[in-house]
Image 1: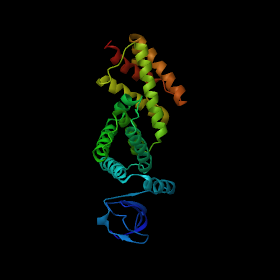
Image 2 (image 1 turned 30 degrees about the horizontal axis):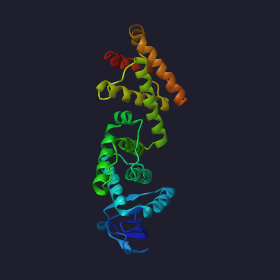
Image 3 (image 1 turned 180 degrees about the horizontal axis):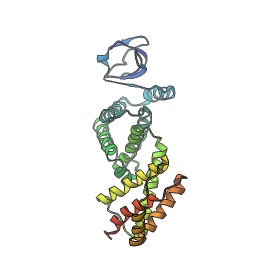
Image 4 (image 1 turned 90 degrees about the vertical axis):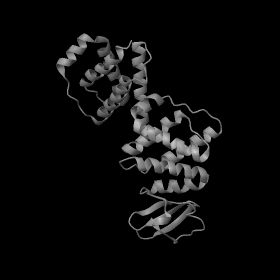
Amino acid sequence: MSAITIVKALNNNVVMAEHPSEGEVIVIGKGIGFNRKEGDSLSAAQAEKLFVLKNEKEQEQYKKLLPQIDETWQSAIIEAIGHISERVSGKLNEHIHIGLTDHLLLAMERVRQGHTIVNPFLTETIALYPFEQELAKKAVEIIGDKTGIYLPKDEIGFITLHIHSALMNKDLGEINRHSQLVTNLIHIIESDFELILDKESLDYMRLVRHLRFTIERVVQGEKVKEPEKIAQLLKYEYPLCYNLSWKLIKVMQEFLKKKVYDAEAVYLTMHLQRLKKYE
């Protein structure tokens, strides 16, 4: 690979540089920015990590953010995000370098000051995104080992959503709203059934993931085929679950402002009946 030309040293370990094929990139390496000036060349061997921020707004945000970060914290966050990037099979949205860095800095500062972090959507988030949650756990472990600041389990849930957002190239706000909707639906089920669901059970995991995919189908306008004979059977055999499934569908429609097709009631009823049998 041809030499990389430094555009600006952000600190001792991070520089903005001009890459011969990628354009402007972020280059990370221990001491890589020390005593460097614009126009200096770097070899590929000196770069421990390199990533591209094609969006100019993202570039400017990162340039402003990095120099303000303690270098130990910065190194830990970069390593954590690097681990995430290496583990995923697809390409992460580049915003993760800004969004997750900023989020982790705030969380670390809150923990250092002794503040409590509470995540009301933790259980559903873990059930919805198990792969991303494992990456989040490892990221927290890396940060803890390098900085001595161990983020709580509730924080792992928030990091999980950032990772899912970057992996699926979806807006974080939308993902948060959908997680909130799943949590609301679970509360309605527990209230109507007058029970506390076993959050570790396989049937609970299946229900939560089914709700997630239902929401995605609704958002995308995807219609599923309605098995009419099964619908009639379920309506007759399991009226409580069937009626509750329609209650949940109405909540989804109101929340998402989109039509939910009738067939979804059939599949929801089957999941609800599995949970009902444990009463």
